Amino acid sequence: MSETLRSTNAGREWWRSAVIYQIYPRSFADGNGDGMGDIPGIISRLDSLQELGIDAIWCSPFFTSPQNDAGYDVADYRDIDPLFGNLNDFDNLVAEAKKRDIRIIVDLVPNHSSSEHAWFQAALNAGPGSPERERYMFRDGKGENGELPPNNWGSVFGGPAWTRVDDGQWYLHLFDSTQPDFNWENKEVREEFKSILRFWLDRGAAGFRIDVAHALIKEAGLPDLAEQLTTMSGEDAERPKDRVSPHPFWGQEGVHEIIREWREVLDEYEDRAMCAEAWIMPLSRMAKWTRPDEYHQAFNFGYLETPWDKERLQAVIDDSLKEFGAVGAPSTWVLSNHDVIRHATRMAYDKIPKQGDGIGPDYEQPNIDRGLRRARAATAFMLGLPGGAYIYQGEELGLPEHTTLEGEYRQDPTFFRTQGKRVGRDGCRVPIPWEKEAPAFGFNETGQSWLPQPDIYASYSRDQQVGIEGSTLELYKKMLKLRKKYELGHGDFSWHKDSIGDHSLGYVNSGVLVLANFTGSNIPIPQGEILLSSQNDLSSGVLEHDQVVWVKL
Ligand code: GLC
Image (cartoon, rainbow, N blue to C red; front, side):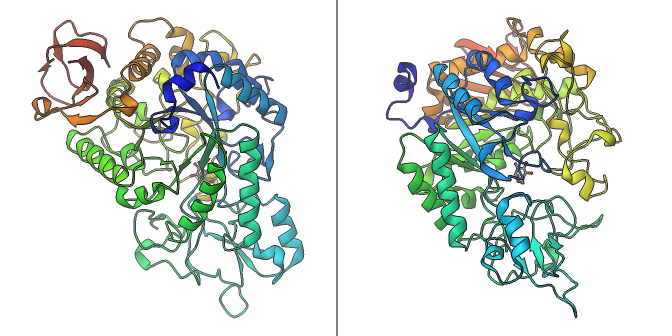
């Protein structure tokens, strides 16, 4: 480990304050020009991430996969899909990142495998009652001839959560039919995943982002969902309510035992961490997953879902610091990822589509200037907070969602399982722009792109922003630099009472005042050294609407 890393984080558990940058490998940088991003592409762009000032990279899945859910359908957990490179490339990535003081976090997908996984294929061949079937969730159906699914659960992506196989049994898949759920009551499954953890830890992974971390255990007997929670497909049907308790598959108590087993594995190694993707509310429940012997962190989706609204932001920050603090965990902060509408677009709307629905050409199109202004303010408000923070590739460019992507290009299983009624998540997954004049805006050298890039991405290209005072990229760099300088990730937080007004909210962390003006009239900027502003122009000495300033008091 380099000296810099050691000195910044020594004895302080790096993950407590780290800024972690999410790479969606398909769309970050494409080394071989086939239109699909890859690991050599990532390596070739590491310098730009070092310049940005991040501490770690979380890579969305790059494992062997038929790519029915963009790699979240894993066929071999111990290998890299040729689309993205090979294990040697992964080792190089870890080594090259380390030279730049950047850690690599791997995305582990334990709730389900791909239907092409050797175990699932064996389960299909072995037939009902076999130990092979025991590793997954096979059941007989209901009805006279078992022709009805075992219960009324629906897939998160739309349609039923059960698919019938040739011999008449059904298997459970909370997501796509090509993503069969593992049976986590099964010993072999548990042992296998501990071994997979070790495989990547031994290769130098700094830890894991754990996919659908809250769904592994299902309620015994697989009871029907109560009427109001029904998730079956259909235009008016509700989708999974992951916020309610008790629920037969989200947040069952039994999952905690599994996490503790994983934690023991991680604790055998130095300095490793796991972050849970658990869409569980309220935060008091989510925080339970980050008790000292469980996950190190959980994504704060309560924060992500909070609109740019003074009262609600104040409440969610209070809640986060209290609930995570109560179990001794840092809160995390996040505004965008590969499953939600990019926040530069989300914030343009007063009312946004439900998570996972996406925005298509028929939807009211956003005012992107309004969205970007608010997104910059919201990010500046977020990055002053103590704890860990997550950034999704492209947000440092102020990149908006691709909101006019035609159906013919869509790839998200949600689109297909709902017959296009929910367009899905492709709009936030489009390859990011590097150089305005280059093919595919520098994503590669051939101009190919697995999802077409909208023309407006040209003006967001990195080369249009580097060194340009006031660009979103330079704003992010400045924020991360100051965050480090003043150790805000480890800092002491308190509300700045004097700054709390009808449409303003301020807090102080380590002597830095972070002050936001939400809507309405200008407010004066308190005395002190102005460190940064989410909008460049502060010549008037006042803070305008949708603007955030950092002031050293
Ligand atoms: C998680 C991932 C999402 C994926 C799903 C199924 O929510 O973030 O992209 O589709 O799990 O693995």
